[in-house]
Length: 328
Image: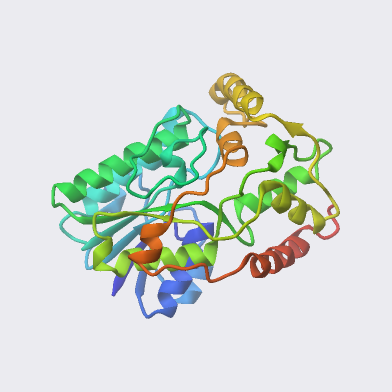
C-alpha cells in the first residue's frame, strides 16, 4: 500500500508515518521546501517537497498513491480568519483537486472543534452536523469538512473524516504550552475551576484510529470521533503536568468571562499579528465538557484506548523532565 501523509513532520504526522512504515506501507511524506526531514528519511519515507497553498508545487504527489492522510493545517489558537482558511480550507481544496482521480481514499483529519466551540460537546454524535461558533479554527474545520463531503458525494474520491479530541503526548501543544505557561509568573489559571473532562486522546491511540479509518471499507463517507476513555479533569491534568516541574495551577476564571475576554483580546491583537494570552478557542476547550460520543469509532472500526492515562502520564513526564530540567 502506498500512502501520502501531509503534516508528516508534525506531532501527529510523525507518529503516523512511523506506524504506517511499521505496518509495511510505502510512505510518501509531503514536507515544506524549507523543512528538515532527516528523521523521516531515516525511517525510510520518501520525501516530496511542496506547499499546500501553492497548487503548482503539488503536481504529481498523488500519482500511484492508494490513501492520502491529510493532517497539515494551522494548529494554534490564534490568527486571522484568512490565515486559518488559507492553511485549512484552501490547502485541503488544492490537495483534493490533485488527489481526485488518482488516489483511492482521502482521510481528512479535522477536529472535534468543528462541532462548535463554546458549548458543551458531551454526547455529540459522529453523525451530528458541524456548528460554527465564530472561532476561525472551528469554522474553517467545519467548512472544510463540507468540502470533503462534497468531493465524496460527487464521486470524485472516497473520503473519510477523522475528528480527534484534544491530542496529548510527549511534545504535544497541550503539554508544551501548558508547561511553558506554568513556568511564567502568572502561571495557568483554571477555567470554571477545571471541573470538566479534559477530553484527551493520546497520540498513539489516535494514530491507531486514523489508520483504521484509512483501511476499513465501512469508513467511506463517514466521520469518526477519537477520544480516550480516561476520566481526567482539566484540574487533574494541569496539576499532574505541574508536578513534573514543581508548579500548580493558579487562580480561576469563570467560563463566560474567559470567553468574553478572549473575544476582546483577539479583536485587538489578531490584526497586529500578536498572540493573545487568552483566546475563545482555549476557553472553549478548557472550560466546556467536550466528551464527544465515540460509538461509531468503537463499533464500526473496532477502535479502543490502547495507552492508559497512567502510561501516558509516565511518557509525558519523562519528556517534560528531559526538556525542562533546570529551567523551572
